[in-house]
Image 1 (spheres, rainbow over the protein chains, first blue to last red):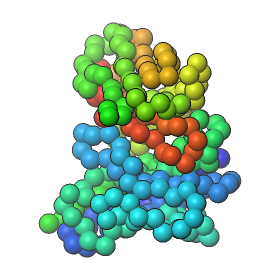
Image 2: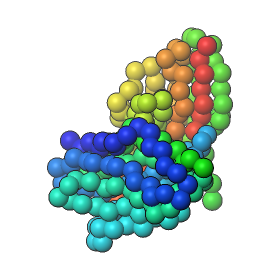
Image 3: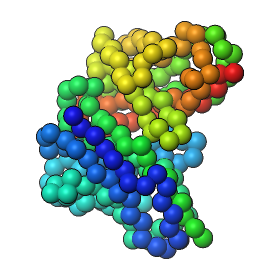
Length: 116
Length: 113
């Protein structure tokens, strides 16, 4: 069975500092991996995804994530935080078709706080 | 190009009342989902529909029913609302092939008093 662990329910960084949000997963097959962002009072929006190929994936708003199979990780980074990055971030994993349709499992989320 | 549309956006119910949350997608997606989001709990799957004509229980189905009316529409019904069902409800859809991810609606904020 697949699962996702996001380390840190809250992460606080200063504006202009590096953003690092951690995600570890477990999966019995090569997974598809996703990061979603949720701004206040809005739905979830796809930030980036890894399916196959290059393990460093670039997304919207300057975010990127690297799939590391040996570490079962898919950490999200951004070199320089902006105030507008303050939001809730969710990591998700899918083993493909089967189970709950896509079988997408979400982590519990990390609230990113940007200090001025 | 609406994506996933949820109605209503806000609702206040009294304990014991019933209501239906509506969801429609215009992307010709096969699969649709209902989640609830509570502080510190992340997203929890209530029900899903892998394809038109099928529905299945998710992690927290008690107190809810669903209907996949057609390929576009997937509704969630609360027959007798309880304060524990106060939450934000999200509908999502996908092609159902695993690697596309989900498209989410903007949510329904439900309060049961």
